[in-house]
Length: 148
Image 1 (cartoon, rainbow, N blue to C red):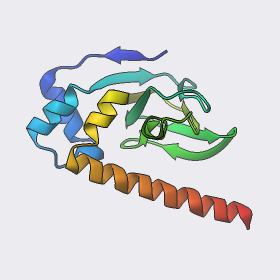
Image 2 (image 1 turned 90 degrees about the vertical axis):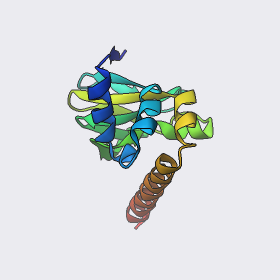
Image 3 (image 1 turned 60 degrees about the vertical axis):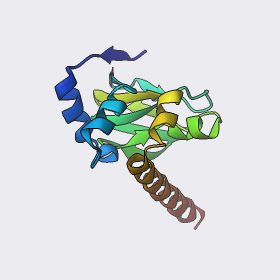
Image 4 (image 1 turned 135 degrees about the vertical axis):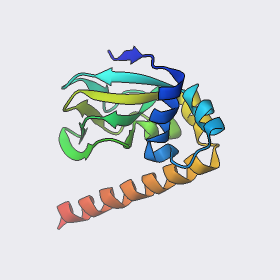
């Protein structure tokens, strides 16, 4: 299982400020976000999520790289700034993919309550929607390519 790591308040705000999803947030908003997230580390080959399981948390990649597998087939690679695992929380459905660390991976973990608290923040919600839209377009393009 993953290991939680505590960091100092000042460095935590700087860390949050560096995450594209939180870019442009005020110090007050970042302090709110700080209370919602935990820094977590995964080792190579360790799974963040498992396809078909119930989602209880999602992750924002800070450092490292992970593979996204659906039906045992790699469909994407994620790295710093990527959000994974949120769909299962938002839809209340089983996980649609397995995400496995390729390298040592450092992430911010958000539980269900934290994610739902986060999406009511206008700046973050808009970026989250753009990210989901981008990923849907990429998945659609991949499906069309495979069907051809």
